[in-house]
Image (cartoon, rainbow, N blue to C red):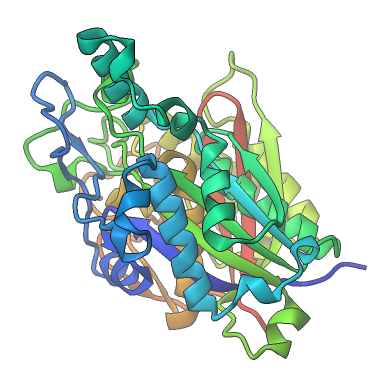
Length: 409
């Protein structure tokens, strides 16, 4: 038997809005969260802009003493989780640990702590290193923080599949609820990779543009002048439930997840080429055809090659109908939050259902002949969306996709 899986809670900390309502208003109004980096001096970097969240205040959810020993991405994860649970109106203490699950995606370790402590070591020696620094900087520590803050000894899965990490965290939770293994999951991703070393490395690899004059115009998916992705940070967490469990407690239901697929890719091939297999597996998993899709939430990180490849994959899978299905990239407003990408996209798609609109791809000014689909340019459009496809490419290994739909009981 397959159980239906619905989304009932949203927690989001994004460069263009903290909290569900602020994030949604920013998306609807085409507001970018890209700005000049302020957490450190970026003057020596080719790319000095990012999707930074300077107004994040973790002490709204975590006591200040605890905040000081936590890595930034762990702070994001705990705060985003508490937001999602509050939005869902659910108390995990009333859910048996065996009926629950936490799945979380990350693509980097706590580079903020690693880099800062390395500088302390070089300058002052080993005795000045924070005693909790290395433990707090390990990827798995974020899961420990969640368990301790929730006081809920449930099942846990931590995933690292680059930009697909959040999509995979949601997809695996969906599979486990659908199969009846669990009834409730807290799922999503958290990232805080805006550091000098990461920014320098991305620039060296040619993955970020030298675009510093007008930060909010730097991320421009599918546009002919796109010249590289813009790194960002944040957290997207959702509460997933088995449908009857949600209905029995009178939960508000944003939408339903009906399919998930993932695919590895070979490094010699073009980046994100594995997305084609992931999308096909998602449709097979859901048991529906491409004709059911009303809109596509694109991976589209504003990369000259990756955006073109995704466009060609959509054409191959959808055929002539590719020109009829709106394709939107929220990375035009959020930048590329690495593992959080799929979580942000899932949240945005669920909110598309609620207001019958599709949010725009901003900064789309100059058409690219090789990217010639309808990308919802610059303005939110009215559209009744019943089913949305969410694409997520993971640079260097994994691509994943989800199918979400409006929930009908």
